[in-house]
Length: 125
Length: 395
Image 1: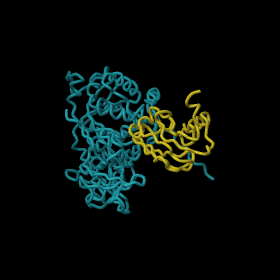
Image 2: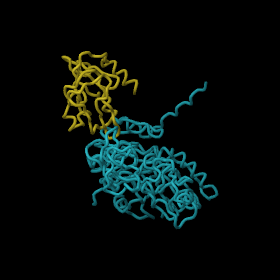
Image 3: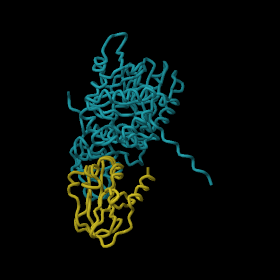
Image 4: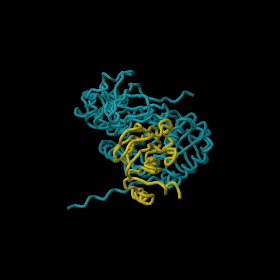
């Protein structure tokens, strides 16, 4: 099973890897490609309570700014400080080293599987 | 119930297939589908600053004026003194509206005693062609929109000269039957000068102009020749670090070079003097021209505009968060009154700091002044600086 198939997705082009009540969140390669070279990432603080749909941070490329939304409700348990210093990780390894936040949750909302997410990106072109 | 008019299909460059094959991402720009980046806009930006970059500019407009009245027609139609431009010389100029605002900024190439090539922004091509035709009435001149029959690529960067001089199939004609090598002719070609040439037997105009702040050339030729030229240049430039460059890097390159972009730093509600290009308006040595009365009156182009009474400045900030077009500028960290507006902004790839161009109240326009940018709710300090942000190193 490939990494893409293991992950779950949102229509906001984020991926979620949920395990043991903690969701690791990043943006998809498709989203990173659309943004262009990421030069700045603004992330929330650890401990912050978040509700599904909240704006958690910003991802900036030379050309545009994208928002990071909370895919689940809970509280932030970790942020990836490495991407703060090397934001290009979001482009080079969006599903791995380019992860952004970890959120402890009690209930996981319904998320898309890889096929469902692919249908969205194909529709967007 | 009425049907909405069908959306006009996007135009594609003659180089479209080459861009697809190179893995480009595309963007819609002024009715064209153009490459925004091939792989990484930062790498493309760096290639132009340190080696060389190749740009597809098929979307630009080219309008030809031919006839004994061409120079006089352009003196009336444009703000510059085109009759004083020598053959093979080029001039950066503007077309003004009656209110003194800018219809478009242009490069005009005099390619013969009675022959001028006007290069317009893609978004303004139709307007400029229409205005030129109407303003040229009564002059002995033909105005032809040749945009569909002239292709354009730009080769920019410190190693442009060596790449172009090495191009196989290129013949450069510096003058009447002189035997001079392409390399010598291109080396001697000065900034804002052009020279007729042939590539694989097809006519081409080579101009030492550009929009990046680097040395470089713009190459005009027939659309059907463009693909062979593009491929041959990339092949020739492989050892010189030449890379194809998309519109994303084109924008950061011109921003660092402090060059205005129509629709951002230039527009119908902005006088040339506000945008730092007052030198393009020539009142001496030529007669009446469209916009002259407004410029002489000193009145704003549009008193209601957010640009009215403000002047273009450069801003440099710390950190990595960039202000973008439309963001407000404030005098202090907390006041409500706006003292200006950002028209372009990005994290400068060359400087590694956020830079922006903004229209500010004149009392704040002195270099060294601190102002505050509203970056999506946070006030970030920025320092007024003179333009350009980047100057290429002297040879």
